[in-house]
Amino acid sequence: GQQVMQIPQYQHVQEGEDFTTYCNSSTTLSNIQWYKQRPGGHPVFLIQLVKSGEVKKQKRLTFQFGEAKKNSSLHITATQTTDVGTYFCAGLSAGGTSYGKLTFGQGTILTVHP
Amino acid sequence: GAGVSQSPRYKVAKRGQDVALRCDPISGHVSLFWYQQALGQGPEFLTYFQNEAQLDKSGLPSDRFFAERPEGSVSTLKIQRTQQEDSAVYLCASSLVRFGQFFGPGTRLTVL
Image (cartoon, rainbow over all chains, first blue to last red; front, side, top):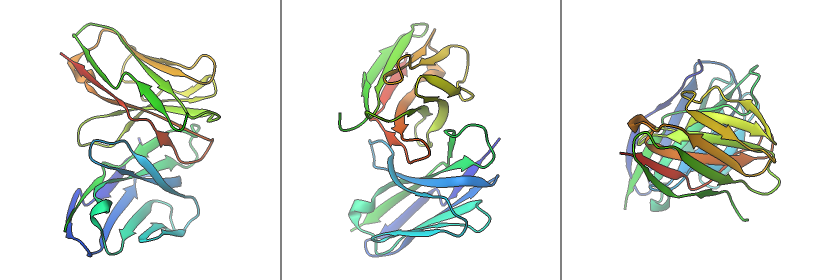
């Protein structure tokens, strides 16, 4: 079945440093979504990417979808302590019959030291 | 309501007991999803509804797990004869079709 791998598993940064997490799917994706989960909280939707090579920005966050629609990345510029949490990518397989079956990566846990 | 709500927030069950977990999605969201999240892991898909139709239940781990959404709004996830390996956080999410999902706070199930 479809697998989604994320690296790194953990990332510790000093406040102000940049952060990137990478996501790779074993199959071509129809779209990819990114979520953030704060400690003790639930996943919160950040963004959805649909087109090959798509790049979207949200303030200090930049999301990219690969040309082959099998990988994606999230980059945070100048991290702040409020960025702390686990970042998950979740892919919807292309050509599948289920429009709802997202496969989540295992997440990247980001800690930011002030 | 403003968001997805789930009840109860915490449930402790003795092994072998049946449990029922409730999800109230965002009004107007036709899609509803159930996930299981183990500690330190990403959410694992269990099942998906579009309105009252259960379109995908491929993630349900065994026939002890059953989900329903009879009127296309509130959904219930039922686990029969609970086992210790069922201990996890059960997350419900809702969305418009093909859009990002909005998650509820989850129900933490502990099976003793």
